[in-house]
Image (cartoon, rainbow, N blue to C red; front, side):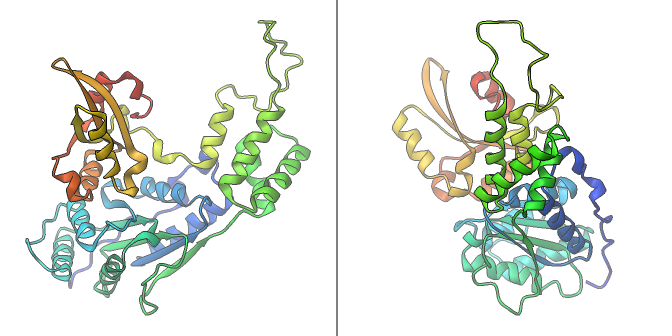
Length: 369
């Protein structure tokens, strides 16, 4: 690799409207550190954090900031073997290594083809502590083999130090910290758009910080419950509201209490794709409930949160349809299809547009947006 691949444009916080997403101060600081490492073409970044501190939110934001065509997001699990990792990378970069090639040989082929086509990829693996040792060794090879030029940048997210990661492997370790009391106050001000008094902010912050010990998710849940408890309930006997005596914490009608909690916790993974289009993997269409349950039990842990099940009448028969959804793009669903165990692949699962699903099951519309 003698020639130099032109680097991507610098990533700055200008790509992300912080004031609209109301990110926690700890996530903002960590986000800037990750962007700085990416701009320096660091080959391997280890993002360490406590559960509920906003790691998944941060990773989803990084996917939005980077070019979606050059970002591969994988969920760490025992089934994510080196072969599956390289298959997913090859599919994302439209590179097909030679069949039956050894892991290192396939990796070299992918890097050479990517270099020739002037391609770069950011590989994001969440829950990296769940990876098998062989997958960690594969990631180390990806890092070591790129001594002169970085084509594949890897971000590992883990609640602990990755087991099996060699001390000699060059890695940039970034810690996503817990909220301090000051961070909690600043975050509440941003979330409530200055609709609470200083006294209310301080009271809520102290209560949330003491009960959650700085955990972002627990902090937001505590605050949400406190705000909900202080909001007056409408008089069921009188249909005309007394606006003069109603105490409103949020003056903007579009900012609902539930919306505040969702924005704060960071449900960025549920953002709709353009034109409300998303994709699904249909695992099976069975005639019995037991067969459907067997299929669902075979789904890897990493995809358990994407299982959807509904019934549909076809040719006068009632079928139990099992899906994995939603996926933001057809490419993302195909990548996930590669990672399924052979027991599920034997049923010949296939990728389908969720718009066809909605025609069969209206009740799933909200889940498939």
